[in-house]
Length: 404
Image 1 (tube, rainbow, N blue to C red):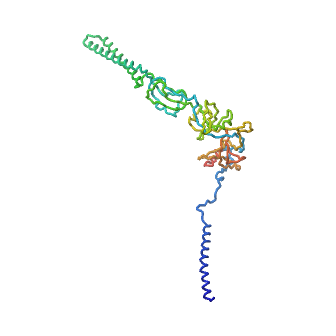
Image 2 (spheres, rainbow, N blue to C red):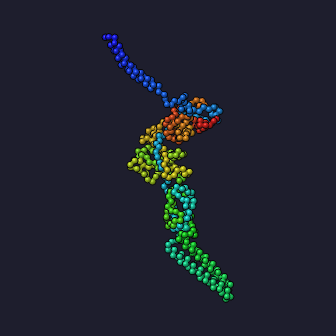
Image 3 (cartoon, one colour):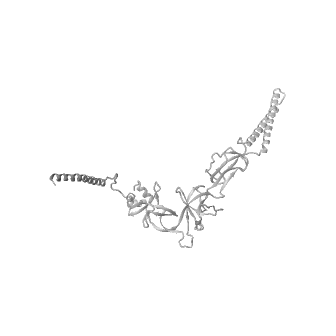
C-alpha cells in the first residue's frame, strides 16, 4: 500500500472514531450532571420531634408545680364495647296538658318546642267560655239591660222636666238618677259577660294553666288567643330529671350482658360521662333486618345535660358466653390515671413522661376507652414509663409560653 493510501485509511478511521468518542463524552457528562442534581429544599441541623416536646425544669420549679408521677403498668380490665345510644324520656314522666274547660287562651307567646320550663310556671291563662246553650241567654240579658237603661233615662228626663216646672220633687229626680246609674252598671256587666263568651275581651275569671313538672317542651299545638274546647291538647312536656338510654345490641351479645351490669354513657361532644343502670322496659324493641334488640338504661339527669333524641356513646361490658370461665370478660391493657391525659387545641391526646431527672417529654398517645378513673391506652407509651399526673397541665403551660 502506498503512502497516500495509508494516510487516507488513517484519516478515515479518525473520522469514524471521533464522533463515537464525542457521544460517549456527552453521555458521561449527562450522567455526572444528573448525579449532582441540587435538592429544591434543605433543612439545616434538623431537630427530632422528641427534642421539641421535651421540657427541662429546675428542682425549685418541679417542687413549685407539685409534679407527681405514676408508673404505667398492665392491668386486667373489663372488656367493653362502644355502641351508639339514644336518649329518651322515661315512660310515664311525659305529660300532656289539656284545656280543662272551653275558653280563650291568653299568654303563652314564648312557649316553643325545646324550651325548658319549671314546675309551677304559668304557661297560659284560660278565660272560660259558657256552653253554647248559654250564649242566647247572655244576649237576651244584654238586650234587657239596654232596655232598662233606656227606660231609666226616660224617667230621669221626665223627673227633671217636672222639677223645672215646679211640679216634681228633688227626691224623685235623685231616685231617677240612681236608677240610671244602676241600669248602666247592669248593662256594662252584661256586655262584659257577652264579650268574654265571644272571646273578645279579657274579662271574666281566668284560669292559670301551669306546668305540673320541670322538663322540656316536646310539642306545642295552640297559639295565644286561640279558642279551645275542653280536653284540647295544649302542650306536651317531658321530665328530664331522669332519662333512659336506648342501646341496640346484637342479639348474640345479649347473653354476654352481666345481670345488673351498669354502663358508661358519654356525650359525643366530650362532656362528662355518667353511669347508667339497667331497667326493665315494658317491651324490648327488635330490628329483624339488623339482628339487634333494644336494651334500656336509666341515668340521672338532674342537671338536664341530656335531652331526648340526643345521640350518645355507650360503653357496654360484655363477658364470655361461658360465664364459668375464669376472668370472663377481662383483658390485659396499659392504663394511666385520667389526670395524666392532656388534649391540645386540635384534640390530640398527650402525656408527659419523665425521661431523666427534671426532664419531661410530651408523648402522643392513642386512647382506647375509659374504665372508671383509668384510661386504657392502645399505643404511644410502654409499661414501666413514669407518666406525670399532678402538674401535667402546668407542664403543658410551661412548654407553650409559661415560665417558672
